[in-house]
Amino acid sequence: MKITKWGPEEKKQWLEQAVIEKNYQRDVLDRIFALSNSYRREKYGQLSYDPERYPIYALLSQNWVDGKPTALITAGVHGYEVGGIYAALEFLETTALEYADKFNLVVVPCVSPWGYETNNRWNPHAVDPNRSFCVENKAEESTLLKQFAATIPGEIAVHIDLHETTDRDKTVFRPALAARDGVDIPIEEIPQGFYLVADEERPELPFQEAVIRSVEKVTRIADKDEEGKILGKPAVSHGVIYYPMRELGLSGTLTNARFHTTTEVYPDGDWMTAEESVEGQLAAIRGGLDYVIKNPG
Image (cartoon, rainbow, N blue to C red):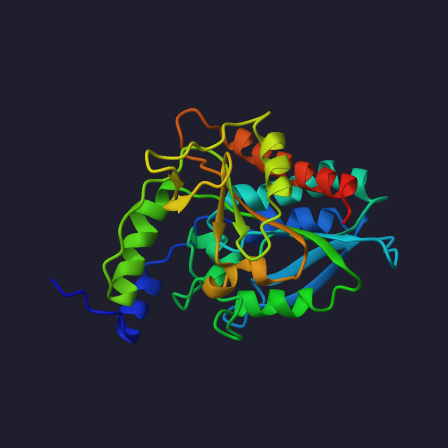
């Protein structure tokens, strides 16, 4: 049976079904503004479809030191993956200043606030921001982040992008993707635990493995399946897979940082709590930064 690709009317119907479920101002912006005494707050854009409701901010080290390596943490590229957003904020609130003498810090807690509020992977135009980093203006959220990242001075030594792989990927997103594009897309099983996606062009496997070692102290790492794969990709190490990030337009292309990883946490298991999911993300940040401190290049 042929699947008919969405046109403007189908996208309009999809958008009309979106419902505000969370409050970006209260959950994210209020916490960002509360941190303004400890970090330099920079508004790097606002989303044109509702600019008053959706300004986007980064928080940067107050005492920026030229020549010091920069650590960039991004979250909420997929707004419905809330654990990464909360972890980025908690990192700023509890941990980031411990690394202030080693790095210039830049943290973007929520790249896609509409997706956060409506529990969506896509933006209102049914475009996936994390498939849009290599195509200018395909997704406003990605373009604004790229433009901001280009203004960060000095060397970005490490970039950690916080994501989740949720049950909603299987039950909502992949069926919608198949309908939008008019193609048959296999429904893959969700990895049961934490794993990392590295850029196949610059994998830096020892860095990925250091992150995994940090995370496995607080939560489970996803096992490979019977074919030795995680989410359809060969597991190159415990909890690590490679993706062609440039080909797919993923956030890993945002910088040329030698050390990059995309975290993925499964938050929906009976054995997982929201707190443990966030702690896994925090452990990933700490593990990555600690490795770069010990192995600067």
